[in-house]
Amino acid sequence: MPKREKWRYAVVKVEGGVKLGAIEAIVQGLVQRVYGIRGLAETSPSIVHLDETRRIAVVKVRRDFLQTFRAALELAPRNTPALLRIIRVTGTLKAAKRYVASLPKEPV
Image (tube, rainbow, N blue to C red):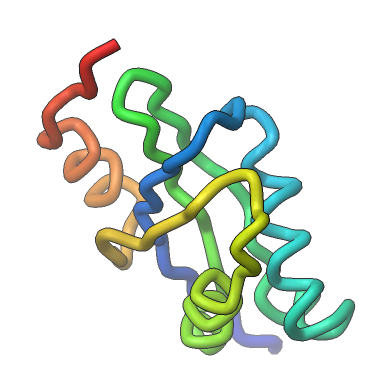
């Protein structure tokens, strides 16, 4: 019987004038740029929660490749339209959503 996949949830702060709907494409592009198609498939990042008022996204990443994901975000070129910073990593989506809800809202 195959083992189930284990995930981590990265709470990511989005800085820059980019729409939050385009964040998933930016995240996948950054991982693919650094680690290629195989790294993208191994990491398999996906946006599972967006908070428009706080400009925060929760990204689901495979547990074994969390460091790969962190490195891909840190190695982003300076001309990337959005600066993505991991502010917290949790083991469950519920804890990630609770943490996002506890953060102050950004002024408009």
